[in-house]
Image (cartoon, helix red, strand yellow):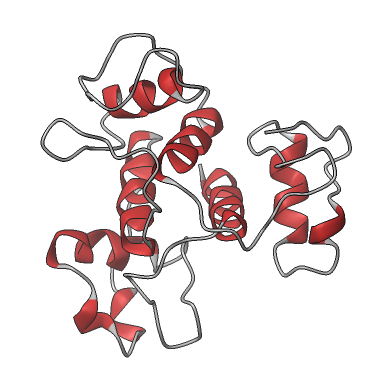
Length: 182
């Protein structure tokens, strides 16, 4: 990942999340894939998203959270461990699955935990507006319900698309909204 001093990426000009991406870049939370490109519509991995959340809260940790698939030499090691040690992310049977794409409902769970960790008071009632609310996993429903009431947007005005993979643009925009609220 590359740093871009002015926060402007050629592939973000005119993109719906351009201003959020530029602001998150200026704050040092997101970086480009190259100096001039961000790839806003590329799906984001679990390691990338955990890193963004940890950076947004200025968290780092060298204390292992016990994930057997997060090697100490990984670029995301301190961020994934910091987010896990703060209770913001969780793994599965000792694995974090850092290279898996993160789903929108997984992202909502992490953002709900992050918002509470930062002292925010969770709302409720946001998920009911989505026509696909029944397809939100039971383990994620409360988080989608809370974050959809002011933090996370639907894919359309009336759909959440919980199992779809989140994009880099969605992550940057969501983190911008989160930081505006905490």
